[in-house]
Length: 534
Image (cartoon, rainbow, N blue to C red; front, side):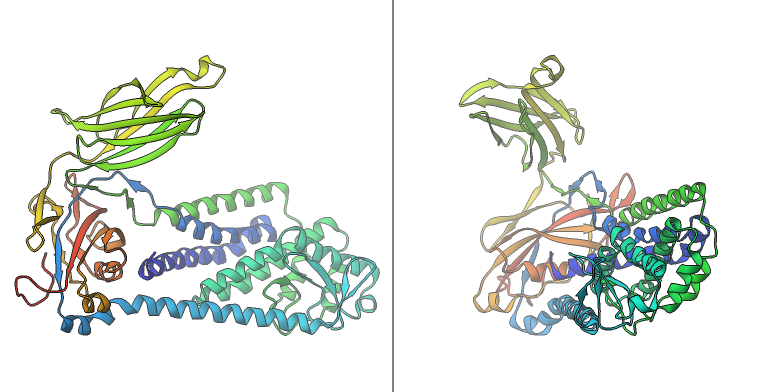
């Protein structure tokens, strides 16, 4: 993944996280009234759900034959000096700034955690299994991610009576039992990754408040007659003056007034709890789907003009199916191999277009060099077909004995014209006429890498460029390059600035992909100015 692609993914994740956070903030009060503090706390799950959904692969459209263009780049040293840095440095610089911010936030949280731990002083293990600190601020607290423990203040036995001590211990144990410490660690990681997003830091305090209110509700549910005593114990607690990233303590942002006021409210009924839980689940599913659906449609890998893409799944007996994707010209054989129970199976296949627009898939299947079958099947483009040779699975106690080959063929078989590289006398890439396919609107030339120019290295990079319905570039990847890795960055960075006319399907603009071969030549054989030519 290039720096530009990573930054784009980071931007999309930021939008998804921010939208989900705003929704969670807006729903805190209504959900608390509906199902109590626990439901409002659970609603925060929509944030990681939206983030993870946005990272899932986007919906894949059926591939269409991709218009492919030859793009010859001849660059002089003057062009290199003027355009080289500005074309390649900014994504790296932005990524570097993000990385520095991430590291700084991690260091800041680590210092806060260390300062709180040092402030506790030496811990003494008590008979009740808790640990007693030498300090008092922010305690009791639950600390430790891998081995959580409860830390109580130095005057724990003197400040609280036995009943209050039991209630506070129940509070901290509830934090540990419900995974609040691990959840707080996830929140800290999100704040590190999105350190530049002030909304996330502001929302983290509200999240902690909902966490404490939910924990209070669980304690009161177990001790319904101890509301007053629990409130008195809260008032005796000294709040800490600094935050604790990994842990649950009585910090400076604690909503004591709100927590004590909540103690006077009746516990939500089972019906309200079920209604609230249903709302949270529905919200999480809706947010996840919205974040996933908001991604640009990811068209399947394109089928170059005059080529076919054959997707296969080969299963022999009860062995796991082996999938493969082959891109080949019509009537060009390709091979599938699988070894099962000591036997070597070989499928030699090819696809031939028919006059009526179908694809004829022909195969020769051998086992240990002996031909077993030569099946054929005619299929429509994009419609799966199956070749099955052997016994039905239901007839042999649920096991399958034989060969099962699923095939899907994409693309048309129309031969493409070729563009010849006059300097080398070889074909650079297949192309289509702009009158019959989508035309280029603007393709700024890439810059020539310094080292390659100094060493007089020529090369070709074939890019796969994803476009939205307006012709804007949404993703760039390298399909192939020669020499490998020399010109990849220069071509990729230039591609992000390209603009295409929209791809048209059924008379409507659609998202899709195109392939663009980019030819780098250190000198212009035609004596031109050194600018790229399409």
